[in-house]
Image 1 (cartoon, rainbow, N blue to C red):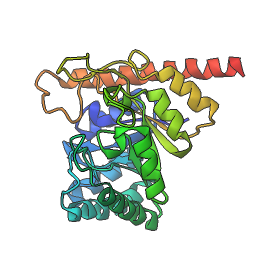
Image 2 (cartoon, rainbow, N blue to C red):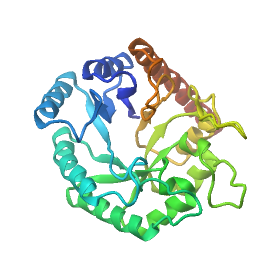
Image 3 (cartoon, rainbow, N blue to C red):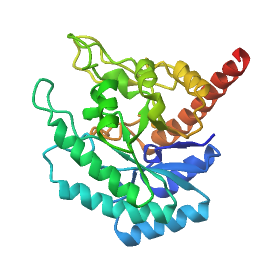
Image 4 (cartoon, rainbow, N blue to C red):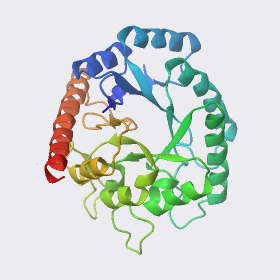
Length: 297
């Protein structure tokens, strides 16, 4: 079983990311940003030095956490920006031997307004095809994007975009309303989401959290794995029983949320120790779930 993580949550500099990975005894990372810059946006000379350093450390990049079609980009954003990200990412994935790149289906428009589904499908078809032509796999994550509205929306993408496979993020359903169901739109159920899309899942992101309290403007609250509302232990047992043999990548969000601009209260030591502790907690949870599956077999 391959274990990985978004090591920019341990620290922005590469050496801290390597240190955290080695502290866990892992050989893989999920590369998103280094020095505050996404891996496909780094200057070429900087990227080359990073690739050489990862080789020397014996660490493989299992996936690119790209900005392609992300929740931060509206569907009306310039598609040339997306094409540029693709063209920069492909040779870098080849250099690092990475097969997977995380993509999304652009930001959610306010519910009840035109979501421009046809335009999203066209863009995703082009994105997936370009990576496929290069022998690579673009995987859609159920984040705060159109596909994250519900499992039904994700399955619609699968139907409309030939060759598309999924990254299933265990925590993201917890803080999103299920737009496939009637008002008042209940919170999504992570296990239910997984069961609906499982045959298309190629990679799994691990996070856990508590959804916002009803009537509150507070955001979701992230927890250690198994302590939130993601039904993580049930999902891990289901993945085991379903024969999942892909990788798990932790994305803790416990010490810092990658896309949260309010980082004033977070210090480097806290980020590092939180990431390593989260990785160890996940290893224990995964072992317990695997053991319970074996006992019930």
